[in-house]
Image (cartoon, rainbow, N blue to C red; front, side):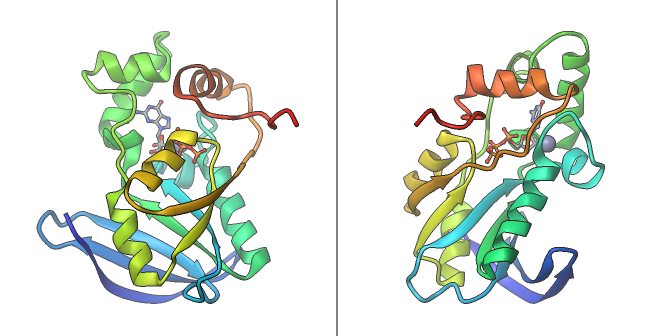
Amino acid sequence: MAFEFVAASRLPTQFGEFSIHAFQDSASGKEHIALSMGTLDDGEPVLMRVHSECLTGDSFGSLRCDCGPQLHAAMQQVSELGRGVILYLRQEGRGIGLVNKIRAYALQDAGADTVEANEQLGFGADLREYAMCEDMLRHLGVTRVRLLTNNPKKVDGLRAVGIDVIERVALFVGGNPHNEGYMQTKTDKMGHMLAPEKS
Ligand SMILES: Nc1nc2c(ncn2[C@@H]2O[C@H](COP(=O)(O)OP(=O)(O)OP(=O)(O)O)[C@@H](O)[C@H]2O)c(=O)[nH]1
Ligand SMILES: [Zn+2]
């Protein structure tokens, strides 16, 4: 799959004015988005968030996860710097899709954790891959990144497709009673680093 740039426009937001860039794979029709601010092609490291689409969290304000607050925190940090990029990847449900994620939520309502639910549906814990990021960053002229994430596997995944991640920057947004089990499972079973590293 090769993701080609299609179009870009201004995107004024509550966090400041971004540029929004649309990319599409001509064969599959799959689409991904980048939000950018400032000059990115000067060779200096760029603050980057790779955000997996989460309709429930990003759009409906769901308290079952931490996606919505993470997306807004990343946009706020880029805006404060006046420079950075957010790759918004259409890989809902850690790659299993929205309908399957809701099926997984139903299993979690019945007692499964977020990994067990995927597995009970016949999926692996995390189906995401990051090859599209290389095409998107090449178009934007980004060569080195400081990655906003609590997920070391995401750092590994991006490096595996040739992206020079020079630093992982924690993106803690706190928790709530509805997502504490989910966050614990991410820590215990998926290697997320959701607490400040002991210095
Ligand atoms: N299958 C499944 N996907 C989920 C669930 N909760 C959130 N997601 C999806 O998980 C993705 C976000 O991944 P997370 O594990 O929350 O975080 P991450 O992106 O890996 O790590 P960070 O960069 O630190 O945010 C989005 O695509 C969400 O739709 C769940 O219970 N089951
Ligand atoms: Zn979410």
